[in-house]
Amino acid sequence: MGLTAIVEWLAVYLFAMLRIGAFLLASPAFGGRFVPLQVRIVATGVLALPVMAGGVALPGPADLAGLQAVPLVLTELAVGLVGGLVLTILFGAATLAGDRIAATAGLGFAAQYDPSAGGQTPVVAQLFGLFLTMVFFSVDGHLAVIRIVLESYVVLPPGGGIDLPRLVQAGLIAGGRMFVLGAAMMLPVVAALLLLNMAVGVLTRSAPTLNIFSFGFPVTMTVTLVLLYLTAPGLATALEDVVFEGVGMLEALLLGGGNG
Image (tube, rainbow, N blue to C red; front, top):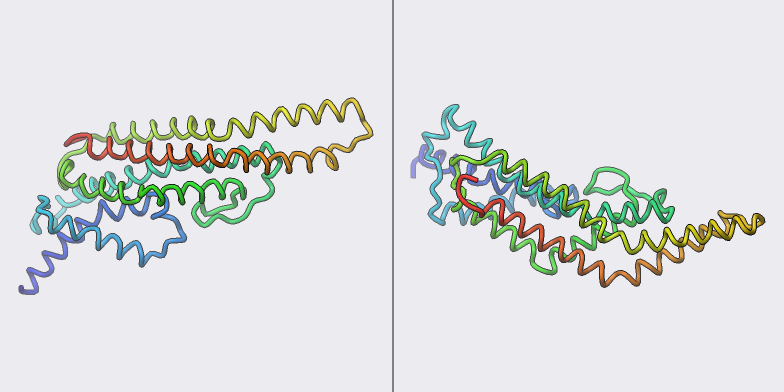
């Protein structure tokens, strides 16, 4: 191979990496700030090898040499980013549930820096997020989403048209499902804490000498920990449902048919 042929092959190879790289950048677990940039680059390059060797119809070097390559690049980035964001939005249900439980239990101040979110997050929300990540890898969800992304090169060939309204609709649907799933996960604990707060309020009202901070706060903390322990098996099942729904939504988005 001459130098020109090598450069042309590298241009096509880099183009094949765009969709995968954008997906890994925007998806949960893979796109966290705790994942080094070098790991993402190597993973993108390795995952693009089956695309190059799988007979996928990729644009030729001549199509990638001019301005006509700009729409092709933007299309690949849009497909990968939307696929990753759909998973990230759905996985936000765990963080949402943990944040609302912490706020109801008075643990909102117990926050620390979350490298995946890039800011201060309640500890309960971080525990829920780590729990979801563990479930995601334990049920081989990472293998399923990688398979879907690789198969999308056949259903949505690079350089083909996409349905932008459908991509936007997928994000909106994922946002709605995030609130529904988050509410389902936090409702048992939040409902119990609401009843507990009402009972503490009645007690402090009937006995004004009781200090609500010295009496109510320890009781609320204890009950919250007990509730989290008792609801852990059900929470694991709910998080598993989040993973399966995210994989199913990603499959419907990327493998639902050519041209959107």
